[in-house]
Image (tube, rainbow, N blue to C red):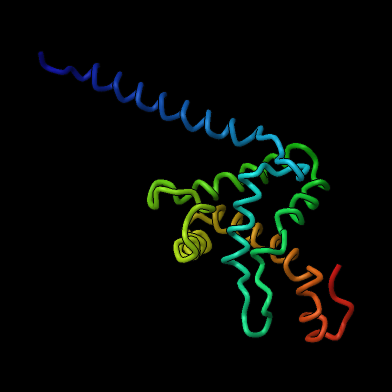
Length: 169
């Protein structure tokens, strides 16, 4: 039995509908995630992503021997999200989930489950992506995490000495 043009078109439309429903379902599940135990706004998965991103974005160096991995920057971001109204807060959560899922097709794991080397490669890819919205979303998130890192009580004395001010929170 030969396949007709009409059948090919119907199969293509069905494939597009299934893909759209899958993406829509995924986004809907990200949109309404409940917060994790001690946090007010972030889910446990979103908090894990923030910790994983902070670890590769702000590692310990010779100049500042305190890395961001164990500073609880997920709690900082959770507190900052308390100042946002409902829809912008949900959009930030959507960004967190989308960036965490970004490496799944190529690296077969979420950002928060990858090795440090793979996370560095993914972060570099996101920061240099051809799409400006992806670059800007990544940069904005790194800026927010960086604000928490730079003002953390274990890190702010280093910046205070450099800038001669009462830096910190």
